[in-house]
Length: 274
View 1 (cartoon, rainbow, N blue to C red):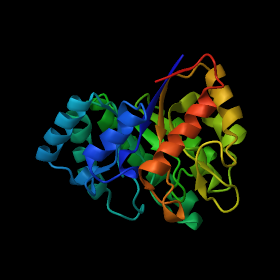
View 2: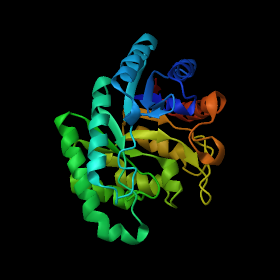
View 3: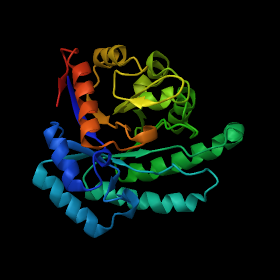
């Protein structure tokens, strides 16, 4: 079976030229586009997109997904603003020829999770219906402090919307940061919905991010199960090795994160990692 590496290039450097150079050095042919030159995907204009497309083609790199910030706002923000942003993200995805957009399920105060549930479902359902018209799949990420930061609420979203155009991006480190075991607890609950993985690990308790296999996500056991399930698709390197477990860290730390993941996958003899 084939697993395909991708990565958040802005964890390497702000500029696309350096991002693509380092991806090539690490044998990675796909990019999960989140920002270029300090501009997130919502700020990229048509001229930016033409230049990005030219550089991607020149370097033989494809876009695995748009790492959008859709839904990473308070639930109290007017939904009209999210819809305007979403239209732009759809245009970016079409221009860069990807069928995946990463998104979130809105920041909701813990004491309002129950009362805000229906509003979250309605919003995500609306976004999913719009994505379906463009034949684009939304990938819900389990980001900490959003509505869907636990596996149970992720499952609630996926079952309620119940569309082939809404699926899960599985981030083990993010689950650890909210006190959830990514494996086996979260994985088995969400397995049938997962089509994309973010690669980073974390320490239980404090939540400090570290390369895959260096934390408490049980990566060897987790990857063994993913392989046995016959998964084929993207694993996107997202090191978050800058100060305070923030995005970034530069080329050296990025390359360390890639090396750690490759070493883990090498134990799965039936997997071809490209």
